Image 1 (tube, rainbow, N blue to C red):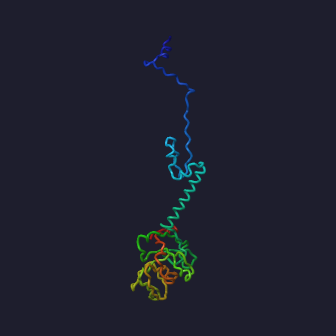
Image 2 (cartoon, rainbow, N blue to C red; image 1 turned 30 degrees about the vertical axis):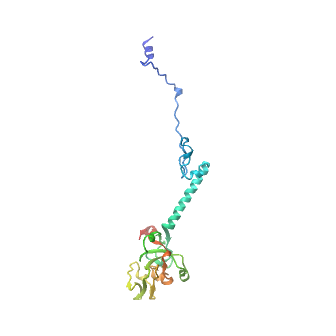
Length: 259
């Protein structure tokens, strides 16, 4: 035996001889395909080791778990959409709600769109009203509020429903309109009310009037006194009619602001 043959037949000390690799025995591992995306409310399918007690992890799975996968996805999406709509409606009903300013009764505080009479802007302001604030505090003088009008508003102003005005008189107060140099100014219990939000050319020109605000009600007036059909015409508004306080203008973009 030659030296080369001896080297080929060297046996390790432990007596173990490794078998030469077989090229045909190599197996290239295949990459597992990713599972398809799960529906919105679906949870991972439990393994058999978990047993029947843990077969469903989400309440919806107890209803849809036995359905075909395609039908389960449809049901999950329907529940997702219905749930989102319910959340939006709940927010509008109890938290905040958007409103559009359709008339000039609150100019220049809140703009309406031309060519309506008295409007100053190209687009009407859109505002948000806080619907829960008056569950925590009483309405205050000067608050700009959204409210449901008394029935007399539709009869005397030709429009009713939901209005936006400013609270001027509080329960039990006497509100007077006095003429000074031909313009109307508000007095509360004999004291002139400071109203920096009213422009001179927006003041009313009369007549002089006096009102007593009933308990549990509020006297509303628009900032554009010359073109506002308000409590001077159809009376005070019961507190139960108040929807919420306007706290933000969100449209148009250049008008975005908080009150």
